[in-house]
Image 1: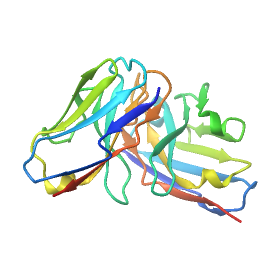
Image 2: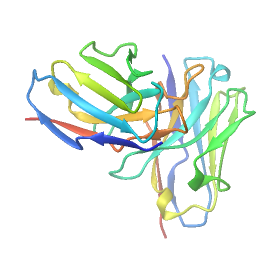
Image 3: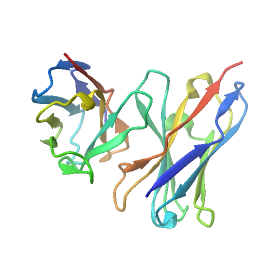
Image 4: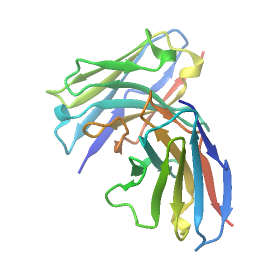
Length: 105
Length: 119
């Protein structure tokens, strides 16, 4: 399964509601996770099984979707959210999307 | 606290071998499937291999099949990746990661170790 993330680069203001998209080439059956990777750091799990929040992750992060289309939403963007975000499917093989780089405007 | 610490990276010539290790602590290592994930410089993430909790099953991406071997020593709580016939395209930071029970996403990651394949 191929994953296409959009946009590749997103610039938003502190406090904005931000939506990142991930689209699969086939049905992912909700086996979709989201990772945050800050510069020079290892990826960190944010969301698994489409909408389950990993322990310790702020509630401003949420996930949704079904079939081939999935979304990561940050309800109120914070400066510490500057990072690249990757989606990852584990329904058929194991593949990552190419990432969305999130910047502060 | 779950900790995964990789070691064994470095500069290696094309065609040569390298073995990575990942020391695990803070959880019962023998209960979890484990994986290696890599990231080429300035590029995205790429799953490399997964091994079952008891070592009986292994899975690889096509580009490393026959060249890389994932293994584990549950008595030492250590994961390994033996990399043979290395190519320039294997240059990347390699991360050790834990799969939670029943699923194949990764919930904890090591800090990564750099492997550079160059003459």
